[in-house]
Image (cartoon, rainbow, N blue to C red):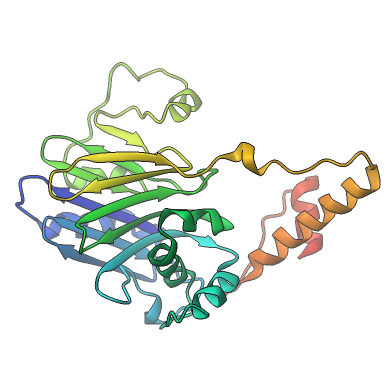
Amino acid sequence: MCGINGIIFKDQKVNVKKILEMNELISHRGPDQSGYIRHENLLLGHTRLSILDTSKKGSQPMSSDGRFWIVYNGEVYNYREIKKELTNKNYKFYSNTDTEVVLNAYKEWGIDCFNKFNGEWALAILDVQDKKLILCRDGIGYKPCYIFEDKNYFAFSSEIKSFSSINSLEFNSSNLGVNSSSLQSTCKTIFKNIEILRHGRLLSIDLNNFSKKIERWDFPLKKLPKISANYKENVDEFYSLLYNSTKIRLNSDAKIGTSLSGGLDSSAIFSLL
């Protein structure tokens, strides 16, 4: 778990203190390192929990060319295969993080890169040359990304409380008392000017005029598994999926563990581990 933050100052009066406060408010998500960058009227912030490549090479915001910058919360489990593919295309890597793989994959394939990822994420990528910022969430929506916007700011964060550094949080009376799952399903919150970036979506923002465009990159119905008429084949396929999905999550440069509740799911995963 890491934390991502960002602020676009619509009035151009950039205040670095605000991104530092946002990072501090979610420092529990990333106790190992925090940082920020400024590009014109944009500030990007990050708090890091080191899992892959615990050295400073994995610090964020990250860039390998000065044009593209990323802040990223999540993990792409098949990053080694994608890294090999990119290396064959003459990309150079300066760290052993999946973050750098995600960044180079976006540079190579654009938004099509997200269909190559087996993982979970919420991220922001800045294109300095085109003056564009994109926000993206994984198809399931495992990693959170909240958006705040009023006449002065466009901001995003892994947690709502970060927005208190740029404006007071006000309740939206029309959403009070609404079941939390209902709010989640409509990407609303109980606060004014704060919404949730829908899972499987990509939001691009023009830093010149603040125009926004939302695209859907994930289409679950195209990924439905094939069900065999043979029971044993289904059992073997299920075991293979569970085994491989457990094994691929063991990529780590830090100690790993699992929570064991005693149920069938956690017991099966623990046994495979």
